[in-house]
Image (tube, rainbow, N blue to C red; front, side, top):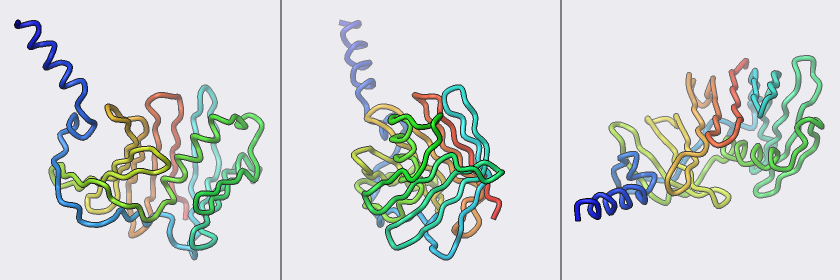
Length: 200
């Protein structure tokens, strides 16, 4: 009987949701998610970038430009100005304008597409709200993936998770008004890390 109870407890804990495992406390929904970091069409967002993918490291300049109400252009170049990739986003449409042969892998392009869409998505519907100490956490769905947005009160972190565990972490630090001076994207299940440091 004792072993049965232990097994049941282990099973229940193992099936706990991501929010319960991380001790999120349910709270009333207080509004939609607002991401201001790449929302100004008059601003060129320029970062020094370091991308570690599998066993390769690429350094250069990462540029984000909002070109219209629902359009963004994201370009990554070497410091000498040679393009490594060039992507366009228009609502749910995504276009690869250029990508270096070494990076031209369908699975990698799809991952970058998802990551960068998180960076530029400005307004998202809050599905559930939680609190953790002084942090408000808002859950939403983007491209059929679950994300948790952490507000302290500015947006400081985003986590993509499945039902049980974290898959991708976005950290926004050294926030100056509506610009995150430093951004870090880390994947837990593949070797991919992106570090951005503003040089505006």
